[in-house]
Image (cartoon, rainbow, N blue to C red; front, top):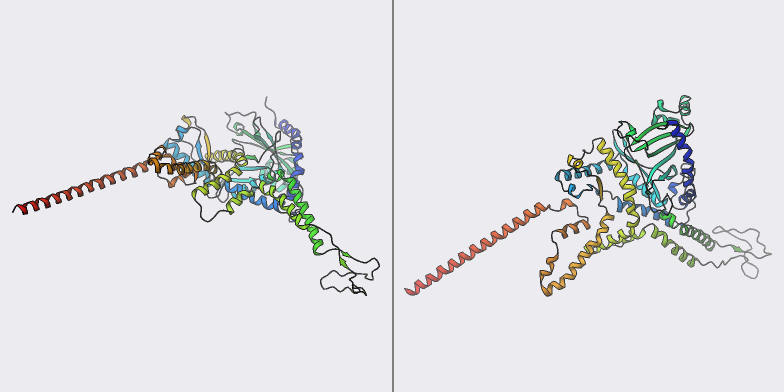
Length: 548
């Protein structure tokens, strides 16, 4: 028996405190991260005055600058701007070889990236904030939806608004977003006719700045009916609830999950992720404490405390530059005031500070940057591959998770919307006849770095064969598949497919080359025959002359 709307709202609101309780232990850690690593995030978990100074508790900026570099490195390796780092494909290899299907896959990939990077979509800045959230808190909620008439739009919500639950596989399938709207904004979003009594009263009384807490719930629909034509046929239900009224404002649905909730790494029996900042939070605390101590010690070294005689005649000391202190010299010529020697070991303090900075730099992947910055002007292809392989080794353990929890969910939602509105054509009949399913192939620097080891191995293999070829002959190269090797090397070196000739064009080139060689051989044969005839004629002429 289907539950009524009021019963569903009561069930959601009754269970929501338990969901909040699961997140509560994390919030103190996230607030400390905001104070010491990510001042831009302050104001989410704690109320902050707009425009106020933030980051006043940061005495060492290793972590905050490391977060910026982490964001740049992660972005460049996973979603590099200007590259088609994903390709639409199917799970059926035979289907991928069908010419009609290949044309549709190319069309879908082109249109997907055109929609994602359109100016009004805002993908770049929001993806940047998503990666920054991963580096700070270890979890990042990324919203993908359709702006009717304008295309896709993206939004990274601050983690303070989001609560989640996992399914039996450990995947996030239920999202709660608790946020505030004033009465005017609520009327804009939901329409004046759909407002709950309290919100409607605020609008009617012209109290448009009155704020209300809204709870948006997206979760799998348990009473789904695929035969229906309304939102109840969709896989996910969407409900907006006014917490003050304990009443539903709007119900809807989605055919795919609109929010990707990705995590950097997770610990056993934990739902929320752990970030690089959380993993080295002890070192971050230490470097701030050391830096604060060094500031005090340096201040004392530059402006030391003064030692005065117990019965001195000085009543007031002027510490400003150029100040006069009458009576500062005794009758015997000795100074009556002298700086206090504190005995502080500043060099040792700086050594301790630098030692504690290293784990922070490692956590924020600064070695990825050092590999780039230390490159020479001219490098061989082998050196380039070696650097790519090392970058991939540093990023792969954490970044590969984003293909599942972030980009996989995001792309499914994007294709769902774009095919539904007709921006991408529906797949050809052969796709449905074969029972095909869409999957994404990732061709970003990270995936190419994983292939770098194969390319490096092939290069070393050829180098080792070279001296052997000088001994036994070039027959040792016959084991190499000269058809497959160049194309696989092109993939590892990020050469675009369109720069390579198709197998048909390669066959045409070889045939033309063979014909040219045949023509050259025929011409050489004709020239040799003509020379032979000429020589024969000359010889006969000489014989005739001798006979005469």
